[in-house]
Image (cartoon, rainbow, N blue to C red; front, side, top):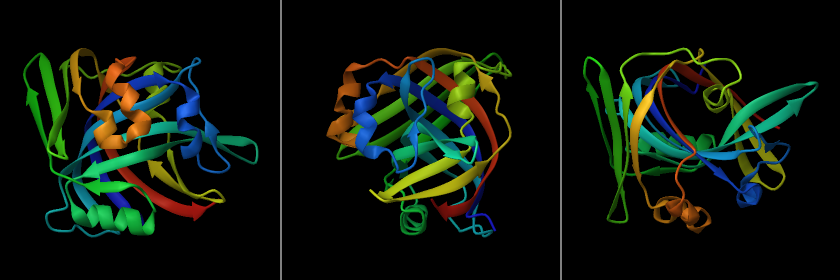
Length: 235
C-alpha cells in the first residue's frame, strides 16, 4: 500500500543556481548531486495537495492543504541505472498529522505552519500565490502565467526539474532512505511575471540566507497530477 496518494496541483517552482559546496553536508550517503548544464539547483516549491489519503485513508481536515518546500537534486546508481531524485531541506505544511507521519516514518524535515493560497483563473491568465508565516514574518510566492497548458520538450530545464521520481533522505552519515514518487509527465504554463518574497534565513536556516540576495534563474508553473509515494527502503 502507498504511504501517500494525492493530487499535486499548481506547482510554483523557483529555481536558484548555487555553489555545490553549500549542499555538501545535506547530501545523503550513496547519492551525488544531479547537475543540469553546469547548474547546481535548489528549488523553492509551493503547491496544493488535493484528495489526500495516507495509507489508503482520508484523514478529516488533512485532505486538501498546501505545502512549501526547499529541495535539491541528486542521483543514485543502482546496478547500471541512474535513479534521479530530490532531497528536501525542509517541507512546510499546515497539518500536524502530515508532519508527524512524515517525520516519524520517513525521517523527513516537516514543519507545521499556516499556509494560505489562491488561484485566480481568468480566460487568458492564471495567477497563483502561496503565503505563509514563520516567526512573525510573512513570506510569499506569486506567479502570473498564460492560461494555456504546454507539453515541454525532452531535454529542457523544465524536464530536469520535474522529472525526478525518487526521494532520498539523509538519516545519518551511514544511512539513507529511498522512496518512489510515481506520477505521469506533467504539463506547464508559461510564466509571465513572478514575485518571490521570502527570507530564506528565517525559513530554512543560515546556510540559505544568501538566497535573499539572489534572483531565481527560472520560475515555472506546473499543473501537476495524481501522485503516489511508496516503496520505502534503506540503501
